[in-house]
Length: 311
Ligand code: MEV
Image (cartoon, rainbow, N blue to C red; front, side, top):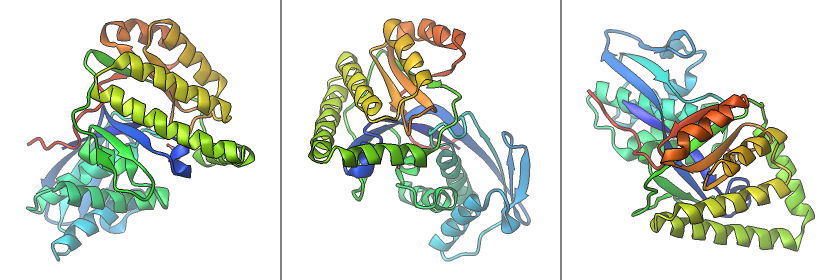
Protein backbone atom coordinates (compact mmCIF):
# COMPACT_ATOMS: atom_id res chain seq x y z
CA UNK A 1 0.00 0.00 0.00
CA UNK A 2 1.37 3.39 -0.78
CA UNK A 3 0.00 6.90 -0.37
CA UNK A 4 1.50 10.14 -1.72
CA UNK A 5 2.60 13.41 -0.11
CA UNK A 6 0.93 16.69 -0.99
CA UNK A 7 2.03 20.23 -1.66
CA UNK A 8 -0.03 23.38 -1.87
CA UNK A 9 0.44 24.70 -5.39
CA UNK A 10 -1.11 28.06 -4.69
CA UNK A 11 -3.56 29.79 -2.35
CA UNK A 12 -1.97 28.96 1.03
CA UNK A 13 -2.71 31.50 3.77
CA UNK A 14 -5.39 33.15 1.63
CA UNK A 15 -7.35 29.91 2.00
CA UNK A 16 -7.54 30.50 5.77
CA UNK A 17 -9.51 33.68 4.96
CA UNK A 18 -11.88 32.13 2.44
CA UNK A 19 -10.06 32.13 -0.90
CA UNK A 20 -9.58 29.06 -3.08
CA UNK A 21 -6.39 26.99 -3.06
CA UNK A 22 -5.04 24.20 -5.26
CA UNK A 23 -3.08 21.32 -3.77
CA UNK A 24 -1.48 18.43 -5.61
CA UNK A 25 -0.35 14.92 -4.82
CA UNK A 26 3.37 14.51 -5.46
CA UNK A 27 5.55 11.48 -6.02
CA UNK A 28 6.94 10.92 -2.55
CA UNK A 29 5.27 8.10 -0.68
CA UNK A 30 4.44 6.54 2.65
CA UNK A 31 4.08 2.77 2.49
CA UNK A 32 2.34 0.24 4.73
CA UNK A 33 3.04 -3.48 4.55
CA UNK A 34 0.70 -5.69 6.54
CA UNK A 35 0.13 -9.23 7.64
CA UNK A 36 -2.53 -10.94 9.70
CA UNK A 37 -1.72 -11.63 13.35
CA UNK A 38 -3.09 -13.56 16.32
CA UNK A 39 -3.18 -10.67 18.76
CA UNK A 40 -2.46 -6.94 19.11
CA UNK A 41 -2.22 -4.36 16.36
CA UNK A 42 1.52 -4.02 16.15
CA UNK A 43 2.90 -1.12 14.11
CA UNK A 44 6.59 -0.77 13.37
CA UNK A 45 8.08 2.37 11.83
CA UNK A 46 11.34 2.14 9.92
CA UNK A 47 11.87 5.92 9.99
CA UNK A 48 11.14 6.44 13.67
CA UNK A 49 12.61 3.12 14.87
CA UNK A 50 9.50 2.43 16.95
CA UNK A 51 7.49 -0.75 17.43
CA UNK A 52 4.20 -0.29 19.24
CA UNK A 53 0.97 -2.13 19.96
CA UNK A 54 -1.82 0.33 19.11
CA UNK A 55 -4.11 -1.08 21.79
CA UNK A 56 -1.78 0.56 24.36
CA UNK A 57 -0.46 3.34 22.12
CA UNK A 58 1.93 6.18 22.98
CA UNK A 59 3.30 7.35 19.64
CA UNK A 60 0.76 6.06 17.12
CA UNK A 61 -2.53 6.89 18.84
CA UNK A 62 -3.51 8.58 15.57
CA UNK A 63 -3.38 5.19 13.83
CA UNK A 64 -5.33 3.58 16.67
CA UNK A 65 -8.14 6.09 15.93
CA UNK A 66 -8.05 5.10 12.26
CA UNK A 67 -8.16 1.36 13.12
CA UNK A 68 -11.12 1.88 15.46
CA UNK A 69 -12.95 3.94 12.82
CA UNK A 70 -12.51 1.22 10.20
CA UNK A 71 -13.65 -1.54 12.57
CA UNK A 72 -16.67 0.53 13.71
CA UNK A 73 -17.66 1.12 10.08
CA UNK A 74 -18.44 -2.62 9.82
CA UNK A 75 -19.69 -2.90 13.42
CA UNK A 76 -16.74 -5.03 14.50
CA UNK A 77 -14.08 -4.83 17.17
CA UNK A 78 -10.59 -3.90 15.86
CA UNK A 79 -8.86 -7.05 14.56
CA UNK A 80 -5.24 -8.07 15.19
CA UNK A 81 -2.62 -7.15 12.60
CA UNK A 82 1.07 -6.43 12.09
CA UNK A 83 1.80 -3.39 9.93
CA UNK A 84 5.19 -2.04 8.95
CA UNK A 85 5.43 1.59 7.87
CA UNK A 86 8.12 3.43 5.95
CA UNK A 87 8.08 6.82 4.29
CA UNK A 88 10.12 8.98 1.88
CA UNK A 89 8.22 12.10 2.92
CA UNK A 90 10.16 14.62 5.00
CA UNK A 91 8.52 15.17 8.39
CA UNK A 92 7.50 18.72 9.38
CA UNK A 93 7.99 20.14 5.88
CA UNK A 94 4.28 20.81 5.20
CA UNK A 95 3.99 17.84 2.85
CA UNK A 96 1.36 15.91 4.75
CA UNK A 97 3.61 13.08 5.91
CA UNK A 98 1.35 12.09 8.84
CA UNK A 99 -1.69 12.06 6.54
CA UNK A 100 0.04 9.89 3.94
CA UNK A 101 1.06 7.40 6.66
CA UNK A 102 -2.52 7.39 7.96
CA UNK A 103 -3.92 6.80 4.46
CA UNK A 104 -1.52 3.92 3.71
CA UNK A 105 -2.12 2.40 7.16
CA UNK A 106 -5.92 2.69 6.87
CA UNK A 107 -6.10 1.03 3.48
CA UNK A 108 -3.77 -1.75 4.67
CA UNK A 109 -5.70 -2.33 7.92
CA UNK A 110 -9.03 -2.48 6.08
CA UNK A 111 -7.72 -5.12 3.68
CA UNK A 112 -6.35 -7.23 6.56
CA UNK A 113 -9.90 -7.23 7.97
CA UNK A 114 -11.34 -8.36 4.64
CA UNK A 115 -12.85 -4.94 3.90
CA UNK A 116 -12.62 -3.12 0.58
CA UNK A 117 -10.72 0.15 1.18
CA UNK A 118 -13.13 2.55 -0.56
CA UNK A 119 -11.96 6.14 -1.09
CA UNK A 120 -14.54 7.36 1.39
CA UNK A 121 -13.57 4.88 4.13
CA UNK A 122 -9.84 5.57 3.80
CA UNK A 123 -10.33 9.33 3.62
CA UNK A 124 -12.49 9.38 6.77
CA UNK A 125 -10.34 6.96 8.75
CA UNK A 126 -7.23 9.00 7.92
CA UNK A 127 -9.05 12.17 8.96
CA UNK A 128 -9.71 10.63 12.40
CA UNK A 129 -5.96 10.00 12.64
CA UNK A 130 -5.15 13.56 11.54
CA UNK A 131 -7.38 15.02 14.26
CA UNK A 132 -5.07 13.43 16.85
CA UNK A 133 -1.98 14.90 15.19
CA UNK A 134 -3.25 18.37 14.24
CA UNK A 135 -6.29 19.08 16.45
CA UNK A 136 -8.64 20.62 13.91
CA UNK A 137 -7.14 19.99 10.47
CA UNK A 138 -8.74 21.28 7.29
CA UNK A 139 -8.69 17.75 5.84
CA UNK A 140 -6.80 18.77 2.73
CA UNK A 141 -3.77 16.55 3.47
CA UNK A 142 -5.65 13.27 3.90
CA UNK A 143 -7.97 14.16 1.00
CA UNK A 144 -5.15 14.79 -1.48
CA UNK A 145 -3.23 11.71 -0.33
CA UNK A 146 -6.36 9.55 -0.78
CA UNK A 147 -7.76 10.84 -4.07
CA UNK A 148 -4.54 12.13 -5.67
CA UNK A 149 -4.20 14.46 -8.66
CA UNK A 150 -4.83 18.20 -8.37
CA UNK A 151 -7.42 19.25 -5.82
CA UNK A 152 -9.35 22.51 -5.58
CA UNK A 153 -9.98 23.39 -1.99
CA UNK A 154 -12.07 26.03 -0.29
CA UNK A 155 -12.79 26.16 3.41
CA UNK A 156 -16.18 24.71 4.31
CA UNK A 157 -16.68 23.14 0.87
CA UNK A 158 -16.04 19.62 -0.37
CA UNK A 159 -12.62 19.38 -2.07
CA UNK A 160 -12.86 18.73 -5.81
CA UNK A 161 -10.37 16.66 -7.80
CA UNK A 162 -9.79 18.62 -11.00
CA UNK A 163 -10.39 16.61 -14.14
CA UNK A 164 -8.55 16.82 -17.46
CA UNK A 165 -5.55 18.60 -16.00
CA UNK A 166 -1.87 17.85 -16.21
CA UNK A 167 1.57 19.14 -16.96
CA UNK A 168 3.54 17.14 -19.50
CA UNK A 169 7.30 17.47 -19.69
CA UNK A 170 7.66 19.11 -16.29
CA UNK A 171 9.04 18.17 -12.91
CA UNK A 172 8.42 19.75 -9.58
CA UNK A 173 11.39 20.47 -7.34
CA UNK A 174 10.57 20.50 -3.67
CA UNK A 175 13.25 22.51 -1.93
CA UNK A 176 13.64 22.07 1.80
CA UNK A 177 15.38 25.08 3.35
CA UNK A 178 15.84 23.23 6.63
CA UNK A 179 14.67 26.37 8.45
CA UNK A 180 12.19 25.36 11.15
CA UNK A 181 8.97 27.34 11.15
CA UNK A 182 5.74 27.56 13.07
CA UNK A 183 2.55 27.45 10.98
CA UNK A 184 0.72 29.24 13.78
CA UNK A 185 3.19 32.15 13.88
CA UNK A 186 3.10 32.48 10.09
CA UNK A 187 -0.71 32.40 10.01
CA UNK A 188 -0.79 35.09 12.76
CA UNK A 189 1.63 37.38 10.89
CA UNK A 190 -0.26 37.00 7.63
CA UNK A 191 -3.65 37.54 9.29
CA UNK A 192 -2.49 40.65 11.14
CA UNK A 193 -1.25 42.21 7.89
CA UNK A 194 -4.43 41.27 6.08
CA UNK A 195 -6.56 42.92 8.77
CA UNK A 196 -4.37 46.05 8.70
CA UNK A 197 -5.02 46.37 4.97
CA UNK A 198 -8.77 46.74 5.60
CA UNK A 199 -10.69 46.86 2.31
CA UNK A 200 -7.54 46.30 0.30
CA UNK A 201 -7.26 42.89 2.00
CA UNK A 202 -10.65 41.95 0.54
CA UNK A 203 -9.50 43.00 -2.92
CA UNK A 204 -6.38 40.85 -2.54
CA UNK A 205 -8.50 37.85 -1.56
CA UNK A 206 -10.55 38.37 -4.71
CA UNK A 207 -7.35 38.72 -6.74
CA UNK A 208 -6.03 35.43 -5.37
CA UNK A 209 -9.29 33.72 -6.37
CA UNK A 210 -8.70 34.98 -9.90
CA UNK A 211 -5.08 33.81 -9.84
CA UNK A 212 -6.28 30.34 -8.75
CA UNK A 213 -8.90 30.30 -11.55
CA UNK A 214 -6.19 31.24 -14.08
CA UNK A 215 -3.93 28.53 -12.69
CA UNK A 216 -6.67 25.92 -13.14
CA UNK A 217 -7.07 27.11 -16.71
CA UNK A 218 -3.29 26.79 -17.26
CA UNK A 219 -3.44 23.24 -15.84
CA UNK A 220 -6.31 22.35 -18.17
CA UNK A 221 -4.38 23.78 -21.13
CA UNK A 222 -1.17 22.04 -20.05
CA UNK A 223 0.50 25.47 -20.11
CA UNK A 224 3.49 25.22 -17.76
CA UNK A 225 4.86 28.65 -18.74
CA UNK A 226 1.60 30.36 -17.77
CA UNK A 227 1.35 28.39 -14.54
CA UNK A 228 4.95 29.36 -13.72
CA UNK A 229 4.06 33.02 -14.10
CA UNK A 230 1.17 32.56 -11.70
CA UNK A 231 3.37 30.74 -9.18
CA UNK A 232 5.79 33.71 -9.26
CA UNK A 233 2.91 36.13 -8.77
CA UNK A 234 1.58 34.09 -5.84
CA UNK A 235 4.99 34.13 -4.23
CA UNK A 236 5.25 37.89 -4.65
CA UNK A 237 1.99 38.35 -2.79
CA UNK A 238 3.00 35.96 0.00
CA UNK A 239 6.32 37.76 0.33
CA UNK A 240 4.52 41.10 0.59
CA UNK A 241 2.38 39.62 3.36
CA UNK A 242 5.48 38.88 5.44
CA UNK A 243 5.70 35.08 5.25
CA UNK A 244 8.79 34.57 3.12
CA UNK A 245 12.34 34.05 4.43
CA UNK A 246 15.80 34.88 3.16
CA UNK A 247 16.52 31.19 2.54
CA UNK A 248 13.29 30.80 0.57
CA UNK A 249 14.16 33.86 -1.51
CA UNK A 250 17.63 32.48 -2.26
CA UNK A 251 16.23 29.11 -3.34
CA UNK A 252 13.50 30.70 -5.46
CA UNK A 253 15.93 33.04 -7.22
CA UNK A 254 18.40 30.24 -7.97
CA UNK A 255 15.57 28.17 -9.47
CA UNK A 256 14.19 31.05 -11.54
CA UNK A 257 17.48 32.20 -12.97
CA UNK A 258 18.42 28.62 -13.87
CA UNK A 259 15.34 28.10 -16.03
CA UNK A 260 12.36 27.25 -13.80
CA UNK A 261 8.95 28.15 -15.18
CA UNK A 262 8.17 29.61 -11.77
CA UNK A 263 8.92 29.17 -8.08
CA UNK A 264 7.31 30.03 -4.78
CA UNK A 265 7.14 29.13 -1.13
CA UNK A 266 4.64 26.39 -0.31
CA UNK A 267 2.69 25.91 2.90
CA UNK A 268 3.18 28.21 5.84
CA UNK A 269 6.43 29.85 4.72
CA UNK A 270 8.91 31.70 7.01
CA UNK A 271 11.29 28.79 6.33
CA UNK A 272 10.12 25.30 5.46
CA UNK A 273 9.73 24.48 1.81
CA UNK A 274 9.69 26.08 -1.65
CA UNK A 275 8.56 24.57 -4.95
CA UNK A 276 9.89 25.19 -8.46
CA UNK A 277 8.10 24.06 -11.61
CA UNK A 278 10.82 23.16 -14.10
CA UNK A 279 11.13 21.64 -17.59
CA UNK A 280 12.00 17.94 -17.09
CA UNK A 281 15.29 18.28 -18.97
CA UNK A 282 16.49 21.07 -16.65
CA UNK A 283 15.44 19.36 -13.40
CA UNK A 284 18.85 17.75 -12.82
CA UNK A 285 20.93 20.88 -13.27
CA UNK A 286 18.61 23.16 -11.28
CA UNK A 287 18.48 20.59 -8.52
CA UNK A 288 22.32 20.37 -8.43
CA UNK A 289 22.66 24.15 -8.24
CA UNK A 290 20.29 24.24 -5.29
CA UNK A 291 22.04 21.38 -3.54
CA UNK A 292 25.39 23.15 -3.95
CA UNK A 293 23.88 25.97 -1.90
CA UNK A 294 22.95 23.53 0.86
CA UNK A 295 19.29 22.90 0.08
CA UNK A 296 17.77 19.42 0.22
CA UNK A 297 15.91 18.89 -3.05
CA UNK A 298 13.32 16.31 -4.07
CA UNK A 299 12.58 15.95 -7.77
CA UNK A 300 9.02 14.65 -8.10
CA UNK A 301 6.11 14.07 -10.44
CA UNK A 302 3.15 16.32 -9.75
CA UNK A 303 -0.52 15.28 -9.79
CA UNK A 304 0.21 11.60 -9.13
CA UNK A 305 -2.52 9.09 -8.20
CA UNK A 306 -3.78 8.75 -4.64
CA UNK A 307 -3.29 5.60 -2.57
CA UNK A 308 -2.63 2.43 -4.47
CA UNK A 309 -2.82 -1.16 -3.38
CA UNK A 310 0.01 -3.56 -4.12
CA UNK A 311 -0.06 -7.18 -3.09
C1 MEV B 1 -0.09 25.49 5.90
O1 MEV B 1 0.42 24.31 5.29
C2 MEV B 1 -1.09 26.14 4.98
C3 MEV B 1 -1.72 27.41 5.54
O2 MEV B 1 -2.59 27.90 4.52
C4 MEV B 1 -2.50 27.15 6.79
C5 MEV B 1 -3.78 26.35 6.58
O3 MEV B 1 -4.32 26.30 5.48
O4 MEV B 1 -4.29 25.80 7.59
C6 MEV B 1 -0.69 28.45 5.84
